[in-house]
Image (cartoon, rainbow, N blue to C red):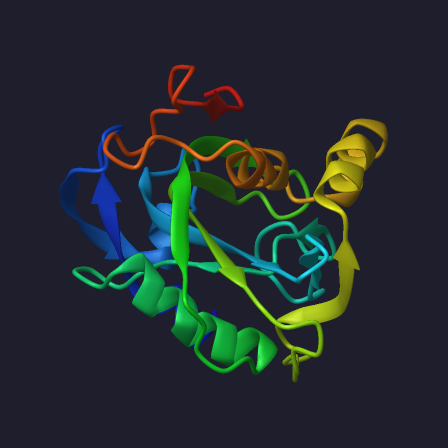
Length: 197
């Protein structure tokens, strides 16, 4: 078990209210426990997003393409602070200005590892320069590529098993930000929840 699997995460309800805490490992054991997470999308001046292919050693959805970076805030830590920590650890990226564009609540079972993702996911966007320097950690990241978000949506439909199951909802939040005064509630629709339980 990696050290990060022993870190604590916040358990939350469907509205993001804190209910308690547990370890990363426990939160991802079936049937899963809803907990706070974040997903970062780095966006270049052309509007492309940086995708990472998750390393083969990841305990959940290894070798699938996902958003730029994701992880879990420690209890009481802001998603933006945690995201900048993980951007440095995973991608070797210096701190960036992050804006929350919505919340994505999802559930997904990984048939390859038997683990579960059940997350109240804060979707964060950062606009970065075209010449952004990255130094990816090979224990975290297998590959990187810049992609138009519309092309991601189309390819997700054509090749869903190549992508992490949360990526569609995360990109949707980027393309259709939610009402900031009502976290998790899109301006024109009910909160999104994907997957079955």
